[in-house]
Length: 349
Image 1 (cartoon, one colour):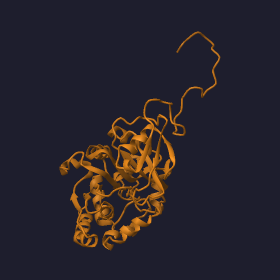
Image 2 (image 1 turned 120 degrees about the horizontal axis):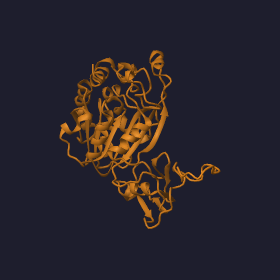
Image 3 (image 1 turned 90 degrees about the horizontal axis):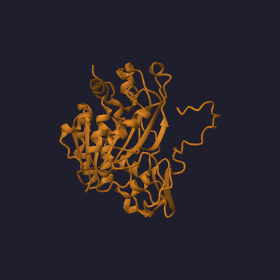
């Protein structure tokens, strides 16, 4: 049985609902803000009962956005995002599991009546082969995915396709499961380990490499949490590896630098982004208070100025002077870190 077959079987037949999960990997435990609770309250109970996400994939400023949900399952995230996008926005969900798609599609009319508009549709397809769906390149403002990339064989294909489908300045905002090391090959084909979102988990540093190769030069970590494995037999198979659920945002902006370079720039959050009146959170290192000048590196400056977030900010500075690596960004000059050695020969090796 292939990995794809295992996933279809596990999510279509083995799991009847989220209560059947053996770990908390494919469960969202993060605090849900009030506006998302309101959106979730408008979703059909059967859709919510078949939800297997591991994060909150609802970034700010989605009004009017065209959104693609990779691995949309029973449709909970798609229907929540549809409310945030509004009647002028659109959400397209893609999933390969017929049983999950049947649940999502069965309640399209119910949600359209509840919302007062229809802006969601679901496609059957493999997110490793998105080109087969004939989606227009460069046509999406935001792409999301919730605990699905770990389930696919060719993860690099997903990142490449996401980059191609995004508009310039668009973002891939997704939650998934990561391991602190590369896992043994046999675990990738273990049905329980795989179905519970652990067997296919990427080593976090391999993920960074794949994302950068696809064109997402500066991945930004938004949130993360350790995962608990409640099944003793499954835990024994996976030890000593440790797992985290994490949410990342990847911007499609050409020419981002490989490090955080300092050009003396700053931004001021003006407010106005929906549900974020006093503070704007870009990632876990950039929590920007309204009205206060916030020094940023060149990459952050561009992420804000060349994306849908630009109208909410004032931008200070230019690119005329470079001051080196931005302080506190994890990279500094390699020189001067070791004590000089006394030369014992005239060799220059």
